[in-house]
Image (tube, rainbow, N blue to C red; front, side):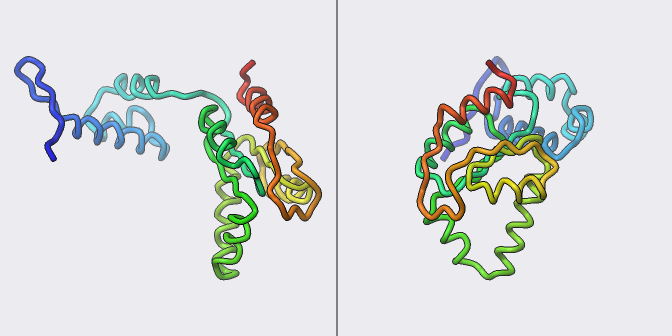
Length: 178
């Protein structure tokens, strides 16, 4: 397969090279480097890094995560969350939830749960769809604002429907959109 190139006057431009530099710049920025540090590392102008971020910006503001289980309309909720620019989405239906627990050792499960908790602590707001039991646990473990959407009484053993309209309203409020 040939590399996509463009001729602009006397120059030959490599699309692959552009994509590599853009990915490197965004990766370094997401790791916490300043625009100037990224520009220096990649031999670019700081203003280019700023414009690059502006071109791809989905939204500004709070870091938002959604977790929920067991969801009947999981795919619909994932699509909505992606459309709204939610940073982290982890939703499962009942079968996936049971498989998640059963298909690993107790130690692996524990380590993954700790990893998810650590990840969620970095978010300003966590929207939790589940039973009330999980709300109390989330509020005790996370430093974040927890917005709870109750799916049913604990233990929930069947997939539940989460209203996309309700979630969209909550996201608009959290993300300060009207």
